[in-house]
Amino acid sequence: MFFSSRSRSYRPLSLTPQKVIDSESDDDHKAQLRETSRTVLHWPLVIVIFCTFLNLLLISTPAFLQDSSVSSDKLITRKNVHLLRRPSQYMRFDEIARTSPPIQREFTSFPMSVSLVDHSAPSHVFNDYLAMRTTRAGTISPDDRKVHVTRSVSTIFQFRAIDWGMEHCELHVVIPPMDRPTTLALYRLNATVPVDISTLSFNVRPPRVAKLDNIVLGQDSLNWYRKLSCVTDDVLVFELGCSEDESSGRCDIEWWQAHKDTAPAVYMIQRSTV
Image 1 (tube, one colour):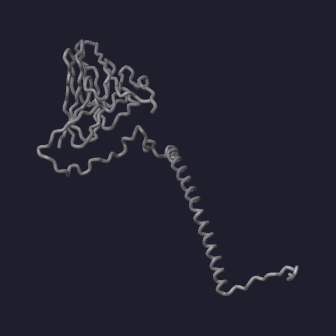
Image 2 (image 1 turned 90 degrees about the vertical axis):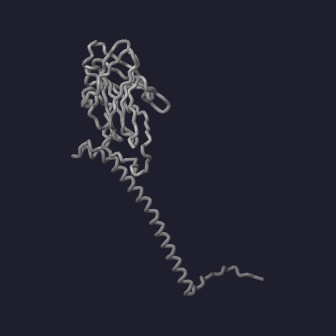
Image 3 (image 1 turned 60 degrees about the horizontal axis):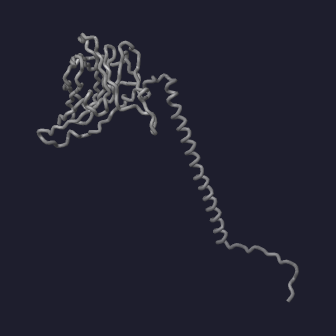
């Protein structure tokens, strides 16, 4: 059998009407897919641009507010964080049925800060840099705080009344026997918000509103106390110094108050009211 050396030419078959319709439908479907893909790819880009713009706006807002007519005290910082509202975590506790008479409960509350001020150096701010130590977590301050009382130096204690229904407070001053008699004075300071101890000096300390008592130290152990009314979240600030009635001229008391030791110490006991 012999084959012709000339290659044959092929012609495409004509499409039927139904095949033409199917082909056009496929083309439309592919075009729709391409348009959908393009739209889907655009949205992440839009979101990224929006988030970047929002971050830049948040970063530049504090500087903008400081440069504008808005007062800087409107900005919340570590020093004025107390301006934020403290929502109650004891909602509807007063609706709980309780035994009558109520069960007496109590706990010991220790000062949230102990700071020194000096009348002879009214602008001096005491710090605990020398007592700081470095750990793997960073530089930390010791839990023990120095209490020092002289003719010019006094110590300020800050407490916060905590828990609900524990509004009978009792302030305690416990000091071991002394070699010589000394008279101290305890004052209540006019403060309703925490005092910033990083800037606390004699000049900026809260003013004295009341002298609670003269505390006389001697050869016997002292456990002085005074009952006070305290509402939940109240800040109570006291100053311990040498009494003006001290005649010996040798008023000098010093100790390190451990975090949870009650002697020597200044601490507060809270008792239940419901």
